[in-house]
Image 1 (spheres, rainbow, N blue to C red):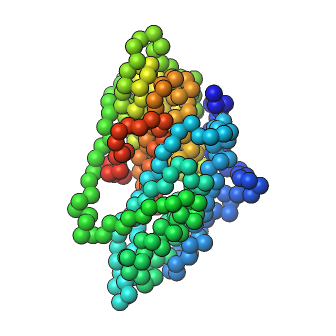
Image 2: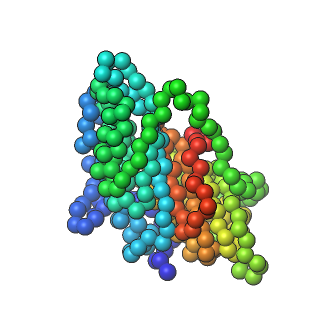
Image 3: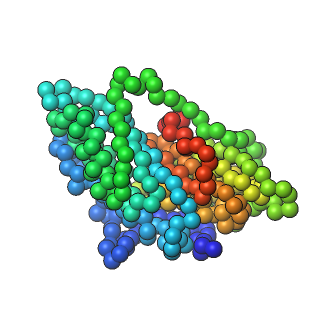
Length: 296
C-alpha cells in the first residue's frame, strides 16, 4: 500500500530533485515579467520532473495507475511562407509515464515565438511534436485545427451523476482525505460521478485553478456526500493539475478501496491553455472525452 500524505497542501514551492538534478521553480518564467517573444525558441520550454511530485504523494516505485494528459493551446499563430498570419488550435496528448511535465506558461511563451516565424503547417506540426517530445522526454502527438475546421469542434459536458446536487454544509477547506468512506457491507456498484466544484491553486503563483471532475469506479459504494466534501476540501491545496488528479486517485483508492478507479479532470484554460489529466487502473472501454466543456 502506498504511503499517503494526509491533510497537507501538496506541490509546495520548493526545489525538486530527480536523479541528482535540482529543479528550482524560481527558474521558471511563471510569475515573472517577460518580453513578448517574436522568435522561435524551443529552449523556453521548462520541464518539471514528475518523480519528486509523486514521491510527495508516497509513490516510491512503479505507478499504481496509467493515463494521459490532454492539452489544448488556443493562442497559436504563425506566418506562412508569404508572410500571411495563420491561426489554429493546438491539441496534444502525452502519457502519464513521461519523465516530465511542462510548465504551462513556458508553453505559452514557446507558442508565442511562432507569431513572426515563417513556416508551413505541414512543417509546423512535426516541429512542435519534436520540441514537446524533447521537453516531456516522451513521444507527444500534436494536431493543429485550423479555422475551416472550427465548426466541427464540440462542447460537451462530462457524463455522470452530478454530486453538486447534494445539499451539504461544510467548513473544511484544507485537504481532508479522511472524509472519504465507502459502504463495505453492501453489494459492489459501478458508478460515474461528476462535480464542477474542484478548485486548487497554482503552487508557484497561488492563482486559482478550476475544474470539472469525473470519477468512474467499480467497487464498494462511495458515500457521495463525503466525497463531495472531500472535493471541496481541496480548495486550498497547492498542486499542478497532474499532481492534483493523482492525489485524488490515491486518496479515493486508499480510503474507499475500489478495485477499479478512474479520475479525470478538465481544467479551465489559463493563458490560452488548458490541461486535462486522466488517471486510471482499468480500461473504461472507451477513450476519455476530449471535447471541451462549456467552462473551458
